[in-house]
Image (cartoon, rainbow, N blue to C red; front, side, top):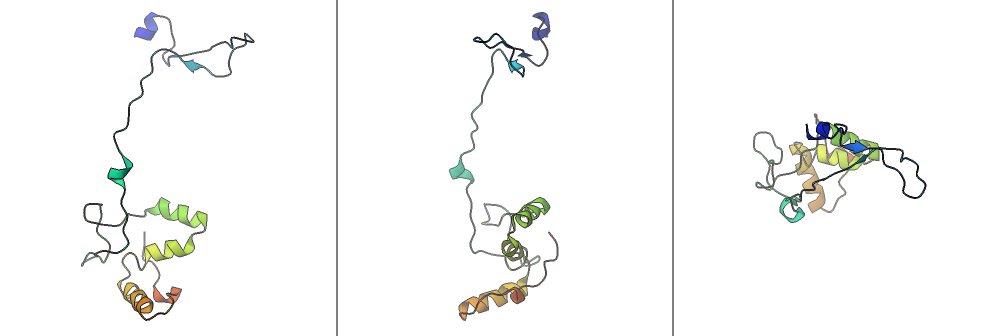
Length: 129
């Protein structure tokens, strides 16, 4: 309403002229007061990492959330991003032995403790994401 009373467009943007050449700029520019708010989220408060930890007895998956020392969820789009980047081994590992493949997790642990290499035969095919 205030913009309309001054005959200004609703967007608050006007075509401005270049002070040197006198030509109009290609795009309209926001004029007037603009407010910037500081975001109160700090990295130190949000940072979370998990190397080892507990797994749910029923689902055999890591618990969710930072408060329970849980893992981060990889949804469908995150898996697509990893696949597009070519990170096949990370994708397979996070979908199997780092998630709900209980037998594969035990086999990987035994391979590591006995000094063998963890191979793709150690884990099964991921169920879903």
